[in-house]
Image (tube, rainbow over the protein chains, first blue to last red):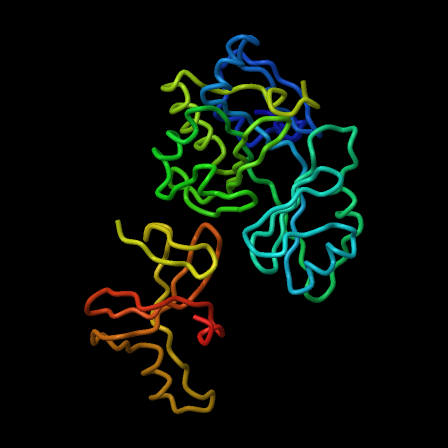
Length: 232
Length: 86
């Protein structure tokens, strides 16, 4: 029998790792997290992405805060926050700031190491005080794109999640294949993307469901570098 | 498909919601054991217009729905304390 120390994983693994066993993939470390960064040849991945591409964005750093003073504290840290609940903005440093309720926020760093880590800065600046509470975020995060995304949504969601219905800066909290998710649409690097976060324990299930439907449409998993050039 | 409107997230299928029971006013802290036992153990099962707690699971939002439990018609929904704005 192995000792506990030998059985422990040396590196942080992506929450979807259990859905990827047995596949011939290229693995790499992003922000200290081990994840698959290549699923097929360039030609195949580009074709998948055009129809229905799916990528694992769980390695992007996240920071969460909530409480009556959360909005004020984030503004004191130099961040511009969404004015209303269920809206999002991009900061000057390129990170996403999602307002998940009147008093709760999720911040996700921009891709790439060249940019400043806003989440790291916020973590260092945070100190417990009345009306300000840290919310640990370890969600499985996904990027979706392609001409068949609307068909995917219609198969697994009960509400209209097309780009038009979502609006420019809306954050939607709904159920996706029976799992509670946070979802938004973003135009990034001249691409029309959908971003999706769910509890990390549902990560492998969510990956399997989306990848399964994607394969039916001749799409499938692609490396995160297909969407974020910093990881190419 | 049955729909319910969350005051924060909008109209969603009922499967996204969890029923939280009737909104009831607890008796005073110094009430008798009999009054407290009645509050804890007994419910009013008569159909009619009731205020109920509902929970939107994906967003973690608790809110109140005024629902006619005879006809299953939801009159309005609102966050607690914001009844006048509904």
